[in-house]
Image 1 (cartoon, rainbow, N blue to C red):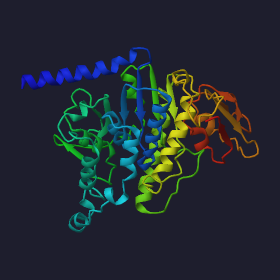
Image 2 (cartoon, one colour; image 1 turned 60 degrees about the horizontal axis):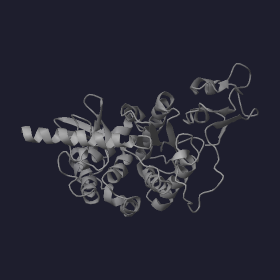
Image 3 (tube, helix red, strand yellow; image 1 turned 180 degrees about the vertical axis):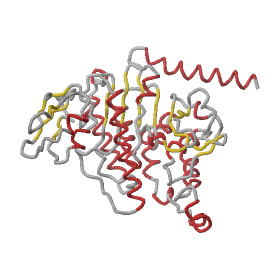
Length: 384
């Protein structure tokens, strides 16, 4: 037992030494991969852009679908390999209804779909050894993913000390287990589910690693993009309600934790359904394109971009350190919601019409809350 504990300590020390190595010649960088169902295939495009631009990262913090892509990347899989894996994913592989459980238990069944089907697929696509206890702490790049304990309501980040004895497969499964969709992951008489319930973009945890730079990929639905394809059905309503709560939580996280050291990538995938499997390659391309635009223009990353000529990369680079804000005076009704939700004081709503105080808002956290909450669609954001 002592030898086993000593080995675990050495692994933990090696893991943190790996992260510290980022100090040598470049900023220590944490990559944060957010949740969003199959929109998470955009993460693969982000990984490709990072590789092509020559930007390295020292640790991955992920939630929900981000933990699936992040777990593969942290284990050493290249973006082309990950794309091959996720492109082969079929909807039926993950969503096999628990017909027998419904017949026997009705609403007492723990989930609509079979978690075992999802878990079995994870065993096939994750690297060898991913089912072994403690494998979440033995990835090539330090990897952490979150879940929520249903009994306590508290968060857990698998891979941290005290929560690093689970397998990589179990960690990823628990981080992806949407409530009511898949059965919770059970460990020591506790049950764990999708970490995106309370933290779909875990910037808080990423900052505890004391990085010099955070590259965060936010997949939550944005009102300034296309409306989601909502269908008036029980499952769609439940998932849409979950997404709305997710958006609000992410807004608050961005307000509190996004700063000049955070390069925020927001692929324009908000119009896709959470489980839209139709065109994975197109979603990957959206992630790659947006990552290129942000990483080559953001003040915290543009100096890191390789000087080699990259086909398809436009020059000169558009500076995107600020967000432009405009209000359509004809549409504005002076309700004041824009001033209420904006944490950077970009609006004033003390007259009949709201006015913009910061037409070029360098402090904007890009949470889109002003546009999403405007009842008349009068607010227009640009340079995103």
